[in-house]
Image 1 (tube, helix red, strand yellow):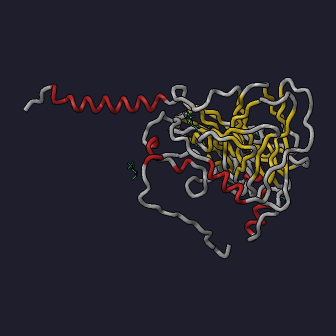
Image 2 (cartoon, rainbow, N blue to C red):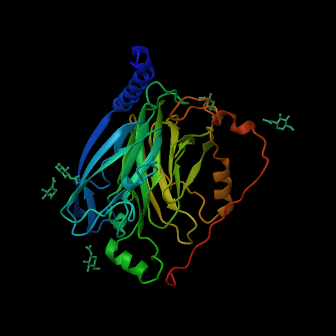
Amino acid sequence: MKRGWRSWLPLMAMVMMFLHVNFIHGEDPYRFYTWNVTYGDIYPLGVKQQGILINGQFPGPPIQCVTNDNLIINVFNNLDDSFLISWNGVEQRRNSWQDGVYGTNCPIPPGKNFTYVLQVKDQIGSFHYFPSLAFHKAAGGFGSINIASRSVIPVPFPPPAGEFTILTGDWFKQNHSDLKAILDGGHDLPFPDGILINGRGSNGYTFTVDQGKIYRFRISNVGLTTSVNFRIQGHKMMVVEVEGTHTVQNTYDSLDIHLGQSYSVLLTADQPAQDYYIAVSTRFTSQVLTATSTLRYSNSAGSVSGPPPGGPTIEIDWSFNQARSLRRNLSASGPRPNPQGSYHYGLINTTRTIRLANSAPIINGK
Ligand SMILES: *[C@@H]1O[C@H](CO)[C@@H](O)[C@H](O)[C@H]1NC(C)=O
Ligand SMILES: *[C@@H]1O[C@H](CO)[C@@H](O)[C@H](O)[C@H]1NC(C)=O
Ligand SMILES: *[C@@H]1O[C@H](CO)[C@@H](O)[C@H](O)[C@H]1NC(C)=O
Ligand SMILES: *[C@@H]1O[C@H](CO)[C@@H](O)[C@H](O)[C@H]1NC(C)=O
Ligand SMILES: *[C@@H]1O[C@H](CO)[C@@H](O)[C@H](O)[C@H]1NC(C)=O
């Protein structure tokens, strides 16, 4: 029996749907990066150290992208050691082998290159990348990943006058291979030698703002062993985003940022025009290390004065309470506009509670 042309309609519709889906997928923009990973001299604490640089930079270059962008990152490993970069917070939907950790991603051998193909699908917010092998992170190779909302998606605060990224964390004078040997020997790392703010020690960095304007600071703890407390002299900070989630907008005098965490805060430059300390100090350590950088008003009438502002040091409850105060804003949009289901979460009654616990396994006595 001969088929009438109408019998082909469902098939044609399917073909068109397929083309349409592909077409939408193909619309997401591509960003291309070529990264050359090398050793190079750095002096973060005033003594010469062998750092891991990306295109000559320490910290590495920032990735500034927009929700759904495709990131094509060709990494040339010019170290004498295998190398991988992990993309902290990037969800890697259905491509876990791009996450740059040993076991899912083959190490990039010395002298070779590998091209990461990532998509920041349905994501917004502040994250960072770091090297995942051989304790390379102790030598550098980390940088920020900032994913902006698409222009059609409302953001739950007015556009800031400017944005700053702060990568901070503890730092050691010993090199990554010596530190790795300490860990491999079954010992804890020693107490760190200092705190870095964007690759520099105290007073190495200045952030300039205009009086009366509002700025976004994206702060990540890229350190190895210690939580840090972050604060800005004479100013309060409004937390607006934690690792890709818009939060209920509470203000804080200081913020605890644990290893690997990233926060966005809004700062209003509403104080007398002068310079102020930005202070970062170690948390839960009996000896407290502090590093400072400078918040400078563009019409500043004077340099920083007085001691850097103090913060909590060993208090644990303080930190728990602060963590408990961080809440998702259920009516703010995320990567997509609300409501999309999550809108109703706060209204659903709890019928069952499941507690998850973890513990440290012992492997080969370690
Ligand atoms: C990477 O940098 C090294 C040292 O500057 C240089 O010798 C090499 O040619 C660079 N490689 C690429 C792919 O740019
Ligand atoms: C290595 O870099 C070259 C030159 O850019 C590129 O053509 C090639 O695809 C890259 N190889 C891998 C495995 O990414
Ligand atoms: C949550 O986000 C909504 C939408 O942008 C905003 O109007 C509201 O003020 C926010 N609520 C809090 C508590 O931050
Ligand atoms: C680290 O420093 C030690 C000396 O303390 C040296 O023997 C070793 O070669 C260095 N490792 C690297 C990767 O530079
Ligand atoms: C939750 O429980 C309250 C009190 O029993 C009830 O009034 C309300 O309708 C419930 N909400 C939902 C979403 O079931």
